Length: 468
Image (tube, rainbow, N blue to C red):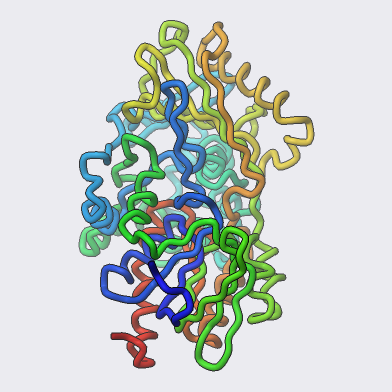
């Protein structure tokens, strides 16, 4: 049993994708590390459960293999046979316009033939290479950026639904620099998005990275929680679940982490503390160590989102299941944001001769929606979904997970929050902040960033002669 009365080299707060990945690199390289997790199981927002033959991923339902680190983790955890890539049908994605589903064009030819965009919008998009870079790109919203470079219609019927699908957010408030840094960099570095995209392909190949547009989508036979559970199992008694962190302080050169472990207050000392907790869960924990941090933590907005899984008999679905799913532009005025055709993408998601779909409701677009009551909203969303999918029968399965605070919004000005925590890390060496409110919200982003955070921790320990 790991002795908590002795000082540890590193204490990681949070057993989600960020925390466990970072902890594993430390563990693998021989560092004395433990992980503290509030919930009864590892996974963070990754929650996977099987009910009545349906698999429900209540948080992230897939990941993009944007870094070789993902494959390293999967191999090290002996999950190679569990890992599955999305069905090729998932390459086809739909956007709702005027009540009908239109395939999102994926190449110049399909774009020219598409009925999703008007002729005027197509001509406007072709002008993008000739648009000058902004004089104030730093403070632009995604809406400002896209309207300027591609036109209003492209914003409304491509970017608006895309932003809702990724962030459950709104392009009017999200920062292009913080939320989509690569898009921002294309303009800053190359002068335009189309030119920059072409030139950037060679650079990604050199870094052995893939863009999110070309990276393979993956999951696991038993859902996304399989990965964090496997990492936690590998680290064994070094992962302490049911550990509610209450305070982080510093005495001399060491940090003290106080937490409630199954009703018993405990304190562990460490040379280095890595917090991967959500911003909203961090406000009080660091207030004695960094007095002005509560205001910064609380300024990170997390909108409410309800994740809804519905199952139908395949014979009751009157349109082809030939894609990833669909997203809904705000101008279409529907209750939900979009739907993933879960059982099309990955195997073992639904019983034989049945299909399941994951709907997303709320977000920044409809943050006040749940004041009407969840049952009413669920009922209305299902009716709208049935109408779009040409289904007359009632679902045979319904399950939901409500996230009062879901995905951190990288709104305009978010770079100041990034800079703030960078400065805190400089002023308090050995304290590091990670998680999806920093440098990317996706599973792939979290795993990619975990190596960076691991290296910072290892460099600190070596520099201060605190390694083995």
